[in-house]
Length: 632
Image (cartoon, rainbow, N blue to C red):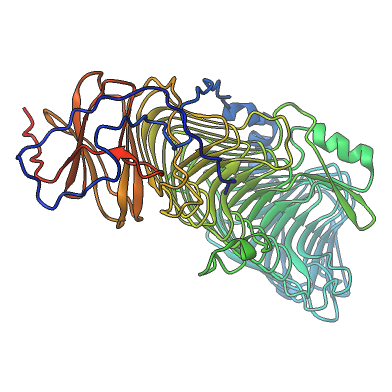
């Protein structure tokens, strides 16, 4: 919410009202305060009249964040079979029956030579791939691997190597891998499947169930790149679900994660400052890529998180469903929204770790950190921010439904939405960023504070703005519906916004002016802090200040001689109405009804103000006997 504007009177022009009446006497007329003949300027006591700058809105291309090396990995990593496979029945395994290239001792099967190994049966122990510079391909073919309290280690370990490590989940099989309750209970660094200082690729269309029983154990933990191809993975973890220190890529997979910490994330950081800076310059470091993958994540803290870039390119048949920290609370207010954990989609930034102190390292490549969504369906239920990014949120497709105990969409610098459908049934704020750009988007926000807010308290001398061009934008807010620390420009589309009826907020609130240069706008709220469009707006507008507030659900309809031009039904009570329509023409007469009461005026200037201003002065175009025209 923004500070109250100091209200001042600026008489920019005198208006001539053409008041019409269908009958000589009006039924139950409302008597205006002040003389009927007094001139009533459109910006009189309504904090308007200044000119506003045209916004040159920045555009973003999702392709700028597409990394070919992550999105197109080596085809050999997708192989589900291998030459001369070695078949191992874990149920009958012993030191004497361990095949060539393997060793078995103290419950641990160690693979010591390159090749393909097919595991089936049950092992109360662990499988370890030794530190060798040969490719190893492990195929799970109906295997169950479980460590015991006497063996508190990861169940499946791939040790340091630069060679390929592939884990295949055989088609039509169910495979279970779990650790014991004592796994790294003190260090918190335990994992069920762990790739130490190497990359890991998981493929195959079978099912892999991963259960972390250690007091603070992660399901799948990879040091370098984790690739997942066409696999069904179910993870239950006492710590994080799936992590990689560098990058994660999911292709055509189905992944379910239940985690008592984070769900799926990169942990790109370093205790060496030069290395942290090198990560910040690497376009693939801290990168999560999701392609045609369905995700269902339930986590105590963040759901799907990357350090530098989260790039999602799904189809509408792929659902990303994330619930964090028990979901959105019943009561949403500032006291609770600023202190909770659990963001559904998150960019955390690359970290420099100095002892116990974590320092964010800004991205040194020009694009900045970003969440990029090209398509797919999303169901996000967050205790904290739903979608949060250190720099940018870029959405160029898809359907997103998000509820949030804090901001539904939060970015330090830019929120850019083009051609997507967004619904926020409940949140503290809808969209907050230094700049918000909506192009041909379908956006519906219902919030307890500001709807769209161009603001960042950490920036000084910055050009804040909200820019809307095309689409349908609907905001229902208990704070300012659209708020900017500098400019607001509406260039196209249908924009319907509703702020509260109290005097401390408004439907439109801008420090530097509101420019209507296209489209249709209906903005309603209280009249104590009304701000009207800039005097250089090219779209004509009608402003109405009602003598008393009307209840939510009272329809607003605009007519010309041929019938209905526009209609909007606010959900909240309101006393001020601003309607700007591209169809408004000079010297033509229009009627606006609020419920059953009609107000009629002729556009003898760019703006027409009807009703009672804050000082109790005003004119009415009031006609309770209005009969809507029949369309010709």
